[in-house]
Image (tube, rainbow, N blue to C red; front, side, top):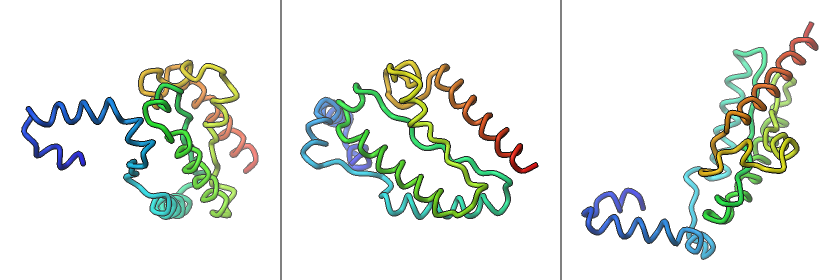
Length: 154
């Protein structure tokens, strides 16, 4: 749709884009949403990446998808459900790897446990990017996992 809209003259494109943006929630609720990467394609690609990374690395950390806030869920209904679906795929692929060198960083759960206010850790405006405090949480979890992994190895 973006490609098609890109060909329209600006005088037509701007009001169409504004209408689509303002009615995004209704459009998605009506079932007209799409994904750029299907769950099956995502799983296949992730499995390939993990397989390749595990050959050349002592440890591979797979960080799952952080939750989004209510503002973004209201704007893009079903986004949280998609995050859950793709996180289950990530967890499944890590499990299927059969390697103790492949580790899941369950940042989704960690964020939900750490704060009752997601906006403390997730950008309130876009519901996706991580705040400074969120980055500190990521760093703390990743550092602990790395230290624990190499402590077990020795």
